[in-house]
Length: 292
Image (cartoon, rainbow, N blue to C red):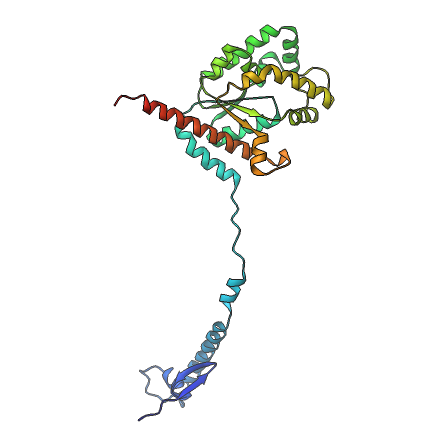
């Protein structure tokens, strides 16, 4: 019985002797002997180099390196998540306008602009439109102080025009909830109360610029006192909104002690969730009212 030998060649075992490796590297169509053929030597050199490379590659500890590496952390882009939610909500909205009510603040304005962008709506600020019609913020402030009734009528006319148009996100002023007529205009769309703590609103007004709703006092305590008085006049109207989004409640839900940790994207996502609920309820009521 023939004896089978195993030879080691560059760290790899081969059946037979090492000479068989050399002979196997020669083309079967060659009639020349491997040991004497000059053409075989370059082929042997290439074979040795190839086997050496394979041997080195085989010794790499790739599985251990992969096992030691930590899995990549998945980071969700809040802007992309917001756009996805907006894309889900938009078809059910069917172009219905959205009115944001609540104390005037930069937070509410930024929120309205972000929602308009996500939903591909147009953004309008009712107070800004009144100021533009009056000739500027100072003129509008004087208009309010000298002719309160005329100013309120101007607010109503602006809301009437906005409510007759679709695909809008309107940052509504306090006049929107201070008369039954204006509240009726809000019923043409979806109204959301953006509830921001008064101390944050007051701090923002002092840091930025005085609101047209405030008179001469500029210190934090004076502004806060005026806002508190204004809030008592308007909170009943705010409560008539279709939904409420509270900055304080969102912070508590996310476990934030600092309200500033809540982003505008967080607020926008909550608004879209509330709109989604409202459109679902409306759809269910419409289906329930259909005859069998």
